[in-house]
Amino acid sequence: MGYDQTEAAGRGRLRPLGGVLAALLVAHSGTRISAIAIPWFVLVTTGSATQTGLVAFCEMGPYVVVKAFAGPPVDRIGPRRISWIADVVSATAALLIPLLHAEGLLSFGGLLALVAVIGTVRSPGDLAKDVMIPQAAELSRVPLERATGLQGVFDRLAGTVGPAAGGALVGVVGPMVGLCVNAACFALGSLIIAVALPKGMGRPQKHSVEEEEAGADTQGGYWHSLRQGFAFLRGQPILLALYAMLGVTNLLDAAYVAVLVPVWAARSGYGPATIGLVLASFSVTATVGSLVAAAVAHRLRRRPVFFLGWLVTGAPRFLILTADVPLWCVAVVIGLGGLGGGFINPIIGAVTYERIPPDMMGRAQGIGDAITWAGIPLGGLLAGAVVAGTGLVPALLIAGSVYFLTTNLTGLRPEWREMDRHRGGERAGRSPEATPAESSSAAP
Image 1 (cartoon, one colour):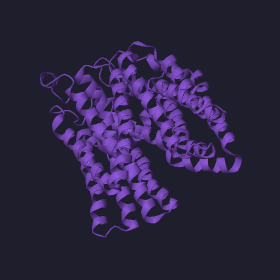
Image 2 (tube, helix red, strand yellow; image 1 turned 60 degrees about the horizontal axis):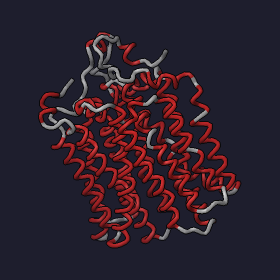
Image 3 (cartoon, rainbow, N blue to C red; image 1 turned 90 degrees about the vertical axis):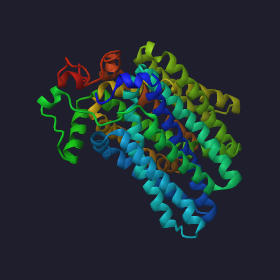
Image 4 (tube, helix red, strand yellow; image 1 turned 180 degrees about the vertical axis):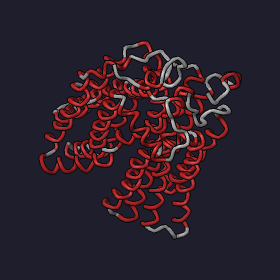
């Protein structure tokens, strides 16, 4: 399988999973810090909200586009090497911003270019770390739901600690110091990937004998490799349904964070501090939910837990903002939503990792991530247009209704019955007895 399990176990059973999760934590924390530092730097130096939005788009636009095409290099070169290279380049680009600014050489065009570089290389870097999770779980002898639950915990921690640290750094010592810390986080992530993971982990996966006999092309070109990823996903109705659902919910979540909550806070007379309270109440309880999911999710039936989680975390967050209720009530409803949301990502990760063969993981997951992230850059734009055209309350009602229909009524479709099919068995592509069709198809 390309790695020495005996050696890995001898050096610490949890080292593989702990190393990948630690790299994810520091890299994602750095990203959250830069998400505060860069927009604030643009605002205080230019005073232009338009230019601030353009900087954000220059990072997220390439991130989403590259995600769709990053899979073949991750599969062919190996996720460990791709992650290391991406973090090194990201650290260099992030550090160049304060260095050039200190020398008076940073133009707005240069800032856009460096931010675009960060977004471009961060995309395959994040994908590579995600791809290593199932292998790390297998080496650490941890159930997939528990591993993906811990992945959710670390991501939530990064989403809580990163903004808090970023806000403090920017407020006390300025945005350029925040970007230096961001660069240090990327550098630390690359160091963890390079030296902390067991020897041989994260190498390119070899095709199985059955796949080679079926005509799997290990020497094909880039576009051939990418087409294999699309062809694989076409035979996975549950993954396609999952990615389509997440594409809609991510768009609505982006609209919620970027426009709907800020407009609600401003029109309700609460001010910017309330925005932080609302978002933090969700993030903190989502961390708790992820911890609980990491402990017990592998013992629960996936389908009812999955859709109950969406029922709690989805539409209520939007609808409560339309009601004339005390602020504590808003925080409670959104906090309960966070608890429900903590159970969703572990199930998504387990279902995905079980169905995608290791040698196909980069391509298939990269395409899937691109689908799920495609609407994020547009969420704020669409929400702003709807609020301007219909008002805040209709916009919230529309968003909440679409969220409910997307995450609950779609659960009646037959492909969702497949959620527990491969549970507790071999991952796709691992079973020596399975044919390629048996190991890669989720069709009944």
